[in-house]
Length: 202
Image 1: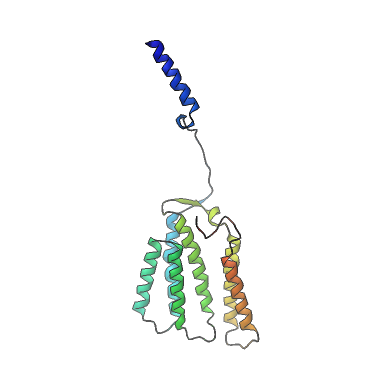
Image 2: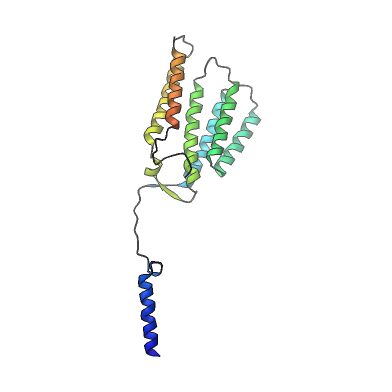
């Protein structure tokens, strides 16, 4: 009987050693750089959404304040509760609809500020959609593609500043140049270049 128990114990030990699923897992130590909590991105959405919609609505006189604030509260709550690219796209489209009522001719330079806020909102929403509130992400991972972001934001801000300086002046070809600059910034914003930071499906 004792011999049988010893033989069975040896057989079980051999099975455990040869079966990877039954072996004890080794201890693994992972080091990370500075991290950011997911709820911080929700706070960013909580600030960016009203800023975008109120800036767009302020350039369109005649829109009733109660309607504007209702839209701001609904969109902010929806985007913070469910940050998805679709929700962010709806908010960006709504900001464009609010700009339809502007009276400036032929072009309001402040609409570039709306475009800048819309870009920031879209980026923050993409990361918030991939990072639950209680989880962490390395700041280095969040900054992948920062050169493109900086080029888009800097180009939009520079174009807006130049448009404000030259507003009211009749410059030949200025409208064409501004249109080409806006198209270039749009292509830069949409280009991913196959980098790790892609706004497609994860």
